[in-house]
Image 1 (spheres, protein in one colour):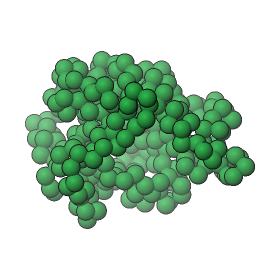
Image 2 (spheres, protein in one colour; image 1 turned 30 degrees about the vertical axis):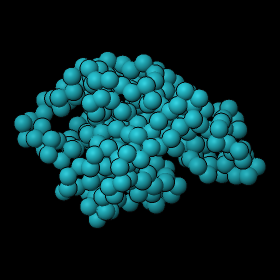
Image 3 (cartoon, protein in one colour; image 1 turned 45 degrees about the vertical axis):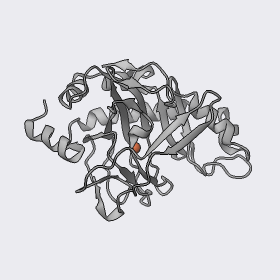
Length: 275
Ligand code: FE2
């Protein structure tokens, strides 16, 4: 499946871009499935979670109990002070997570396809298992910045093994906030670990104080619809706000090796799906 050069490139750079790995039709199927979830979603069911003043606790609960569910998450400022959506529901959702790969047929089929499995194995992940899936909308004008981070902070295994599959459901450009990855430097050790304690409080623990890469050292990955980007969980990456009038839909999977030890402090403890 992957060539020797592609495997080498992944080892050297921590990421690999597989241009138009999937067809436009396949992407449209995923997009339609995501749009249907939003259509069927009643914003009143979560209005309190996202619009009340003292919302941090309810928001945390809504997030922390979503590992084995399909839930819609609103943009930070989706509601006005009266709890009314500022714009159409379809333009107010930040993402859907976190068990699309288990509960929604279109995403389940895609996530468990031979091609995903083969790439995972080619990258050296033994007994790959999917822990999480997300459909990210990065809405026009309001899709916000995602700061520098490493995905392994959220999927800590011993040894570290998580690989992110990031699929462009729509064209991703600098204007609409494409993925940007560390380029041309040694990948820094894991800098943070997101911990969930037994009482459901959480902490983003700083593991060392090496700085994040300069934005000048970021490589924007402008990719066409259907392109798959795979990257090592330790690769620092971020995305700028979407200031354009085009959305930037993406679908992501987080896959670890079942032979490693998955930390009991990870926020997500739902049963993973073996590929
Ligand atoms: Fe990430």
